[in-house]
Length: 336
Image 1: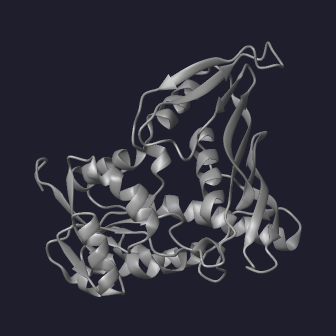
Image 2 (image 1 turned 90 degrees about the vertical axis):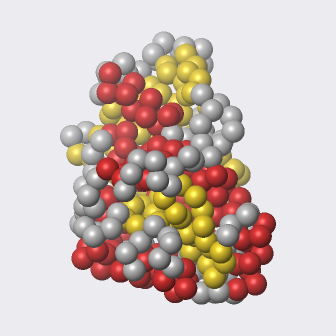
Image 3 (image 1 turned 45 degrees about the vertical axis):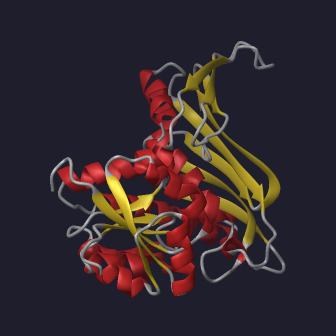
């Protein structure tokens, strides 16, 4: 595939997130074109296509996968459907960018191993492509704050809508799957290591049955830890704090980094408990969804498919599995 050839993307769902957040990012890319959308309701697909100037609309996911003029499929379906449709898309010869988390257990991801070296498959953690995450990791690597001993992440919002899939048990709803996965990825990204065990507690909504609060301690070994709390029924807030032996970094908007605005992170040298030692670093406007799509297109054009991205997703999923096991057992659980 030439470097100038536009990759043709299809969207497997008419979700609000795909329309309002992901699609605007795709539109900014010069490496692709969105050619089709599918829904299990043809009328919904047609409305989505018309509203977003997409040439083709399909009334089933199978029809979109059968379209020979689609190179890449983006999957923003409910979490419980991710593995099934990633596998079907891959077997149809499509590269797949699947929303996070890629599944609901690490074991089910094993079904993707046979196709991971035939097409490109990746978990859609857009945060790893934002310049802020790249820049902060380089600051950590530079030794400016010394070796990281601890990290803390907070991520919360309020959603009590009983019809929202995030509040539906059995299909991958709840705080841990929806936003706890970001805390796991952040810890692995900035510590550049994988956790070995976890202790966690969760609080379940009495009506929905989903975890509305999940708090965990990840042990990375060698005296390094990460704690996090995520909630779907707490005041909207997010932060990442990185604590080193010589300083600390506070990322003020680490996850929902705005698509059309700058972001700022703070570097502290520890000389003021009031925070007066903060040195702000402004990161230029960037759309992390565009950056993610561009990176995926570049990988398709220049690299042979491999199991690397799948193995990465399996570590994320195994960590989430361990969080739930620990919440049930009341003890540290190994990440396997």
